[in-house]
Image (cartoon, rainbow, N blue to C red; front, side, top):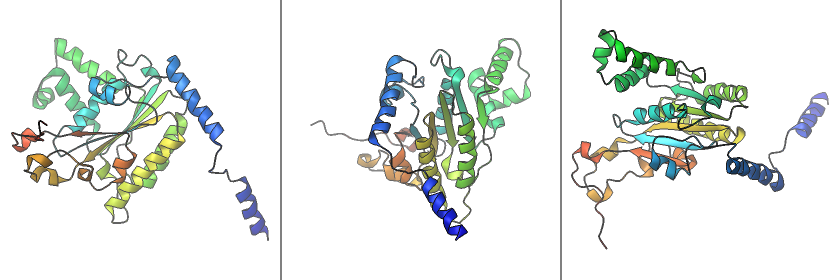
Amino acid sequence: MALRDELEQEEKTKPSLIKKAKDLVKAAKEQIKRYQSGKDKPIKTRYTHFNDNSLGGIFSGMIITIAGISGSGKTHVLQELENDIFDKELNPDCDEYVLLRCNWEMTVYKLLLRKLKNKLERTMRHILFNAPKGDELNKFNEVCESEENDNIFYLEEPTDPKTWYENVHAFLTENIKKKQVIVTIDHLALVRDLLGNKKKAMDDLVEYINSLKKEFKNVSFVLVSQMNRDIEGRTDVRHLAPKRSDLYNTDTLFQISDLVIVIHNPYKLGHEKYMVVSPK
């Protein structure tokens, strides 16, 4: 009887998943007013086209996917978006933003080398075996200092979906008062699969992401995904454009994403014509 009473009491105290429309609309209206008044702002990026297509930038509650084949520049674009988050000219409120990088493919060492290469306009070999001097030293220190930002955190070790969810949930709880928390994953296919089913692991991870987006009102996600290699073998100019089925291993990702950016360069595949369009 004691166990039965305990279960009944637990059922009574369990919060209902069903909520009144009045309460939800009130909260949504308040959020709209915060944007209207300028108290809240989307995170702007250097890409005007991106800002225009996302209503102004990266909003809380958004899930953005960057997809492409290997070597297409996905990580480079992600790095530029991450840099823009803490650019005070673009985002004056950036001190109130927090970035969590799940860099499952590249180590911090490799990521830092890439940033130094772009900033110094030198080869990685030159950077590794030549001590910087003068203006190069200033640029070197500038890049390193920007990466030591106290508002940047890492989850470097690929994990299974549940472990990832538990760690990120705790992180978001700790930062619930921040204006915006951005979580990036590079890339989704490296999630650990404990059950021998990579597709299910990726789908579970994406569902956890959607759950966190609904629970925490100040979080947004930027996800990097591979594309299936089939796109490299297409030769008909009418069918070269990327499709939702080109996203690697998960259709769920397309469904929950607010914006999908596909980085694709047909010229690198030897195509001289791309997406022939009828003039009529």
